[in-house]
Figure 1 (cartoon, rainbow, N blue to C red):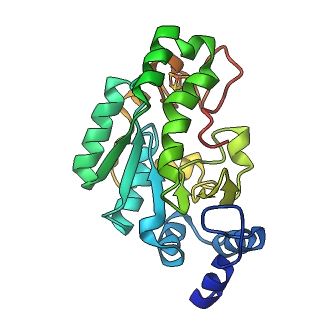
Figure 2: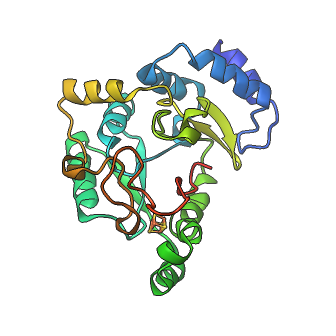
Figure 3: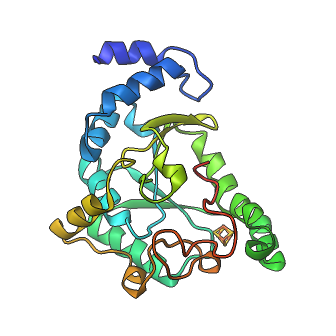
Length: 239
Ligand code: SF4
């Protein structure tokens, strides 16, 4: 698709902040399908205004791979970190290490202090984890999302059933979601990390495969260690 065709498509009206129609999103999916993860990121910055691209990272198991590619293609890209206040010390150390190593600019997104205090006093992660995630993750990001047109995720299809069904581009709650890693396999990820001598999150070596808040993360394969004993499998950010 040429730049003028892209501009024409982008001018069609949809219910996301950019006004992209479903046909335009389908066209983007078709255009980006043959590309690999890195090529998709490069193409994104050509097709969308770079300053309107939102990148978030949880600085979890796989983040070094995702952030290494982003930082090489657009070094000035701001990375938003949803700091729930419930992270492992190792996660904060890993974030700071990757900031230094990749020269990242990271901005923390923090919850409303009253909502956060209520989460603690009620131990919401036990009583109502959906409300806890809403107060400490989803709502704080909603306010930031309004400033952007497209949100880049690092979701991979092999991680959960829900993620396996995601397209590369989708419209979700008023923003275009971009899932450039959705067809990256675990083996691809591990090979890239080994080739570039990138560090995993330090807790991976201790048996954690997926790492979120301390209250809702235990050791385990895949995402089995998240919200153990509960039906919940996603924090709600990507639903
Ligand atoms: S992952 Fe757990 S502690 Fe973190 S916001 Fe969600 S419910 Fe709360």
